[in-house]
Image (cartoon, rainbow, N blue to C red):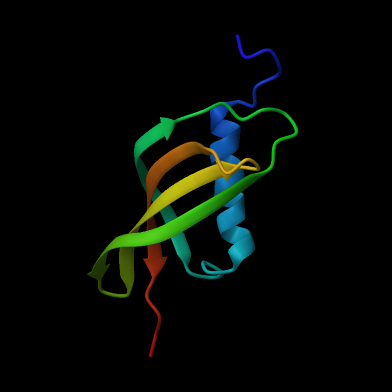
Length: 97
């Protein structure tokens, strides 16, 4: 249908979560992956493509020593085309002051 080999959408999602870890923002703070909302595979990702993720905090709820944080995620290919969009919710440890 697309003329070449397409990468499975869930692999693209998994690589995106790996990119989060490479940022180092969540080092030692992730307790659990809480969920995904509004997941859309906008365009296909092909074998050999390079992807980049942009994340933005859009909501947080604090509960004791923990918080549930919602992140908007936009994933782009090397042509700066949007290929994946979703909101991820993570249960994180709160920073101790």
